[in-house]
Image (cartoon, rainbow, N blue to C red; front, side, top):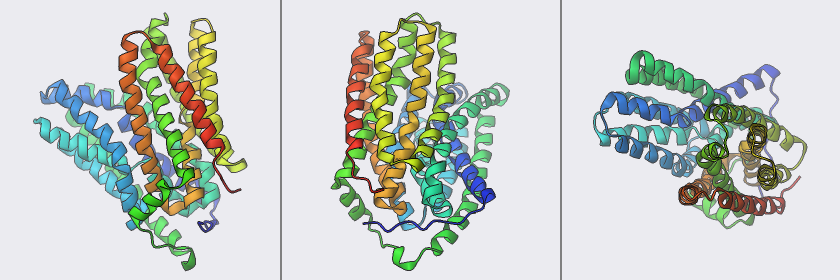
Length: 404
């Protein structure tokens, strides 16, 4: 049984500053990952490296982002979370500088695939929350977790037009220089957060500190029914979100929605994708996390059913996108808080990273199936599968034994 986390007494200004720091870190992380397409175009245009090789380096970055998270979570246990955040920001800076001078597929794979992909893995949501929670206290961290998660969408929205403008004015070199400066600024914020996290940890009573063994913790969690329930539900999250990201745009076009209208709809989806996690984070303060995350999953088959029952139109498309925006990433804050509550703040980075591997596997399977079914126009079958899995995930979450 985990001992309760000591609640911190923080001023309003202190809470705002720490929350803002967490938001800025996660904004950079998400902003980079959702704009890989723009970066790929710039790299192809200015390095002469073949599109297939550029695509391979980005694919490695996506893969490394997911599978590196347990490693960085383990490192956070050995050092601390802010140390990992500093390392991640420095890896990004090094990756951007190396990308700027890459003229070989192998160097590009090292730069974008390993350094940038690994850097984003080190700046993952679980590590960010692991750094701010000791400073804020568990209850306040629960409330702001949705705000920090939602800030990731803002990062993507801001960085896209900025990257395009930089490419138009100075090409890849200017993009990478500006990205390096941005990563360096985030590293400085992480250094400041490191001092805050260390100070907060020193104030914890010695009897509340545990000597953690990495493999033992992972093994213990995997044997835990609650962790398997959370992870299998997270698999469904990855499966469902990949349908939105890889299939929905073309499906809406096939339903007669103009491309420009669909693009605007996805912008609206992104906006509500920021609001939803903030709401779910605050709800976790008022009720058990399992009810919040379970309901987010339970609403997904409802959204699918309503979408297919409504006549194809701009209104139905926008209604669906708003609905998906509210419930899509809203599973992340309660999942994070549930792991924190069940296994302790110290283990959030490690165990959320481990659960995220399930998420990425779900995303991979969904993308693979989507390519097969989508090419045959069988979008509905993929949505049905996503809805069934979401209903099962809701049941898994509702039956988790969560203490009050």
